[in-house]
Length: 228
Figure 1 (spheres, rainbow, N blue to C red):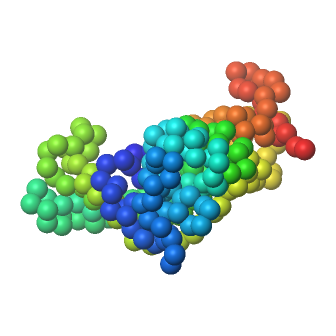
Figure 2 (cartoon, one colour):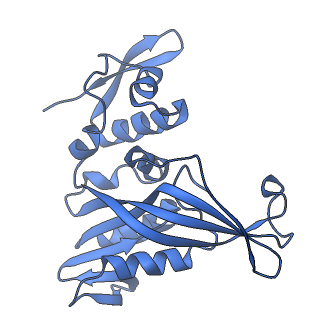
């Protein structure tokens, strides 16, 4: 699991459902472009749907954005239900997870390729979704899940979308009441997120050239926004 996004295990049905939801009449699905298989080709736009692990797409996206408009579509679970199945695959329980994803969670993945958004050919679209995570009591899962395995993720609904086409679009996610200069803790408290996520946000924004370090407050870096 990465942040509040969708994990890498059992993601195939989620990926397929998102591709079906996103596709329009006339789109080409699973089309070959320059030796790569693209989820959706819509005219001159190449669309890749990635539920997690942006680092796996680094070479592909870097190559394709050299000569094509590319959009990376990523789901974040605003609401998630945990479905448990017994060893035979029969439902045991279903409960809502207390964790709620938000757009800012995109930085949990963007940290793996933070400079790509500086290319005019690249855009990132976030889909806030309702989803189910399906666990099965097969004894093969991690000790954290007490042997339960993640066997699937299911799309229930897409509830919102957000498109980012430039570093400035991402910079707009910072709260207007943020002090200047500010620390990662200031950012975390202003947004109501964990410090680790705030650190990933400022790391990405620094790499994009929209934020810079201007000093320290004790051991904490002080950041300011770059404009113009």
